[in-house]
Image (cartoon, rainbow, N blue to C red; front, side):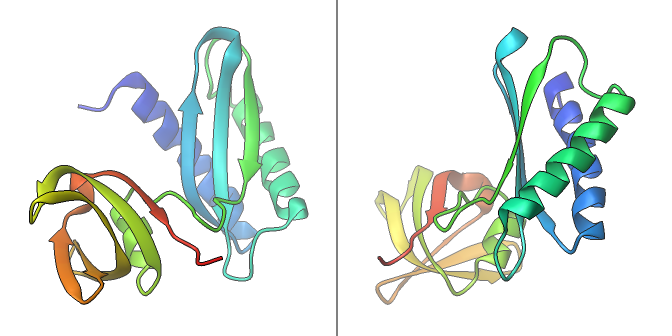
Length: 155
């Protein structure tokens, strides 16, 4: 059963998604961290050609206004941050893995698969399952099995 924080993040995500879609953007992730006066609301936005500072500013303004007017975030103040998820973005949801098909990723699993937890390879997506091509070796797992995952950029 989702907690109060989870339902708050869902409401914020919906507000952010509406604002982003109007501007040709998508929401990659939403985090609400901290407590009391040191709470931080982070919204990660994305678009195929890359996110600009102006995109972040626009979404921050639009989402911040709706959150304040509708008093969605109860209690003490919070800091709103809007940014790109970055080149080595975190992969957390099924949608993240699906959108990252064909890209390289580093994955740490909660439980070992084929005797190991750490894998690196190219993401493939099929029927709700990540099929990681790790140097010609196919490793299959569900997004829920992931402890931590990020895209890997070859510098």
